[in-house]
View 1 (cartoon, rainbow, N blue to C red):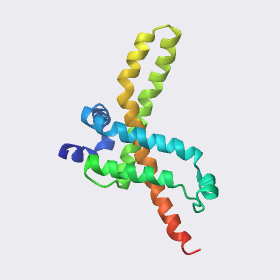
View 2 (view 1 turned 30 degrees about the vertical axis):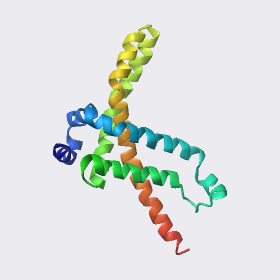
View 3 (view 1 turned 90 degrees about the vertical axis):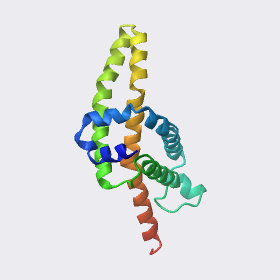
View 4 (view 1 turned 45 degrees about the vertical axis):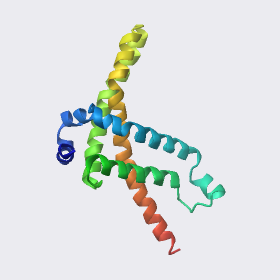
Length: 164
């Protein structure tokens, strides 16, 4: 774990480190279930949105408790994985990672389409299996860059709503 702590400091300067972490089997096994759970909660939050919560669950204006839960889980998982709290510099580093992963998955999506047209389903399946860690890491990077900020904004809104 100490090695992970030192790579987080320099993660935005190295594409290779980002991909090395994406294919780290220990981290994949530790991240997989929580990431799937957080993404499912985000899907449910689309249905149980602010308006639904305000009408049926008596939430305050601008409040989405499901997204707050995702933000808390994201911050906790980050702290457990890297043994440090999530800061702004880490979010910026994960924005760079998202860029790296998107730049890789964009041409592979085109390759999937071309392989489908050429009836090369075995190669397409192989490409899919190889890219599962990248897709998982891209989802993690998305959660890290969006959800803790949203949680902080929600906390600030709740604090200010007490004065209204």
